[in-house]
Image (cartoon, rainbow, N blue to C red; front, side):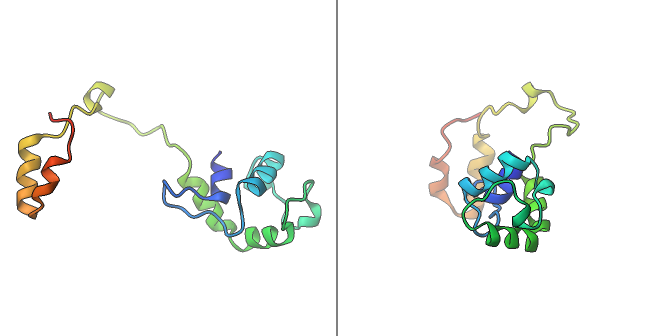
Length: 119
């Protein structure tokens, strides 16, 4: 999935993907080659022929480093050591007094009504 997202982008995570790559072309290439590094540079060597293969190959060649960065950004990191337990990290609500004081300091009184769950 990270290789697919590297090509198509992920607006929710803030990276654009590569120009010209849509879901279909990315799915065809990643479905065939599995990893960005395995996609041949020359589209004549591709086992599949997505629409615009020549332009897609040129884009990938010109932006390969960006694609590798986007793949890294799309990769879930689950090896971060934590001192807290999952129970300690559970959201229990917004600390009302501290939040309201912060809103007053910023002069954003209407923001005080946004939280739906108070600690």
